Length: 438
Image 1 (tube, rainbow, N blue to C red):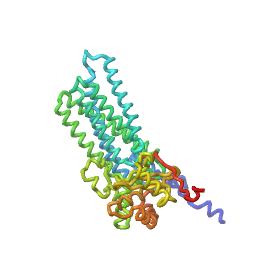
Image 2: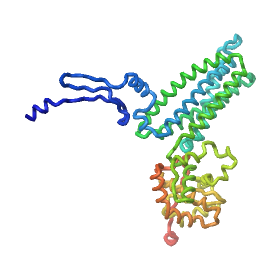
Image 3: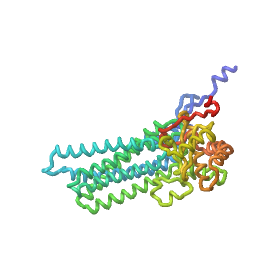
Image 4: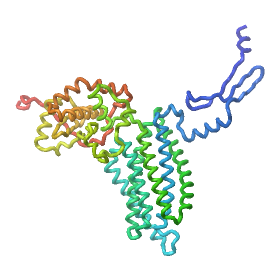
């Protein structure tokens, strides 16, 4: 009796489509009573549109990426579009300066000039990586913006190259050098931002879809650029007006793009802002609030930056080379290592408002983070004429663990400090004097 009831029951099978559990849509319903029937649901055009969209957005979007992904990508695509339009204008000027279309121009001459241009860019990229490669992670916003500004300078050099025929090679090599900085800084910061956007360990998918978005923007920009180059051909004033207008928009779009970013990693400036607020209120700022307060340009671009309380991180030097300290600083270092920092994996020395942090050779990423916050506390006390070592150590003993816990609860990544590579470390051994005499 039970078997007959089970066999006569109606079974309904539903088909759902979508890469995210929250974005699934029913596409068909299949029933087998009294006969097999398939009822399709949903509009076919909507289904096609979703399939096309999958080529440009990560799987599981929007839940698989951070909230700042969409505004950043919108502004980033707009700035890329303006870049590709201007590329047609600058390339047209560069080719005319090399001699394309002129009977007097030689192939070997044009080839040699192009070779020098590319060689300068390659060497510039290597040198830039050598000097700033380890600093790109800690200042991803700033270097992302600077990279595009350097690209603007490079394109400007290409556009002005025909105006200086006697210095043509120098001008185009200067432009290639600027773009080499763009290639290194832009690529490195893009990798760091991709890791930031990835909420489900999907950095590769995000990177692939970003490539699709860039390709689409490139095709549209090239088409518009060819049209603009055709319209403005032979009209120098129109070319310069178009180029400068698009450059201003490019700078604005880049600024808006980096301002959209809400990074949750701790770098020197964000750490300084967070600690200053915690010292004043006992509360921790959210990543959204800190993103509106931090600088996206180098601090020297504003005259008041160095005087701002939020720039206290400029008073801290991490990873100081011990042999570079003078005699009095070395004596203070040895005294501190034997008294205040016996159990710590770092030693702090304060001189004239600057706190030097020397890391132990066995220090971990947690020790680096702790040393930096300790140095910030000490730097904050230097203007108050207190015993900075005792006062700062007392604050660390009472509040540091609570501060780190509040940072983690507010969404900050407290595993490490994003700072330039620390290549100079030290090792100190504290022995009792009586043991040494024996």
